[in-house]
Amino acid sequence: MHRKPDATGPARPAAPDAARLVALLRGDDLDAAIDAGLMAFVDDGAQALDDAARALLVDTQRRLRAAWDARERHRARETRLARRKAERDARRTPPPPAAAPKPVLPAVAAAALARAKARAGTP
Image (cartoon, rainbow, N blue to C red; front, top):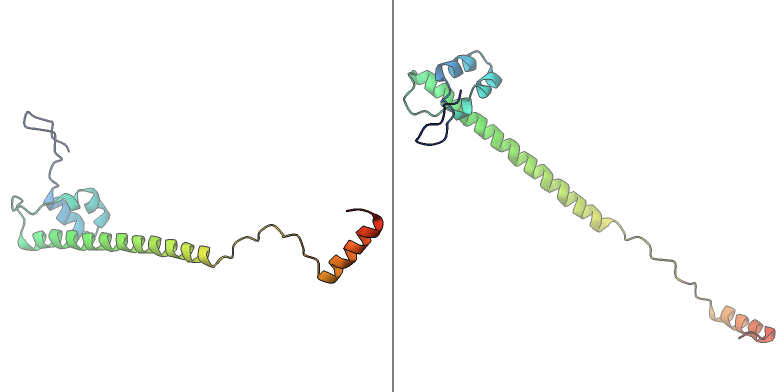
């Protein structure tokens, strides 16, 4: 399907067979038409096609591009929403508790402890 390189430059893929593409589309085999090069078809007028066949090819390309673009926008939106949700959840999650602080004794208990230490003779 590729031409051999010549002195003018690198090899280019051969143009898809428009008549085959039209036959595949009319046979409702869109996947085979895509595999056969539907999206590489260029309406340059060099192919012997009637207006209905040319319109079928161009319209199918346009609808596929629109569908693929919509799919990419949807995927980007889903990715963006997932990222925002993760960021929002991270802000809502309380931070982990810090190491438990040493409990502070009430004044009465601290005074009692100090008296007990004084009687025991410990500083």
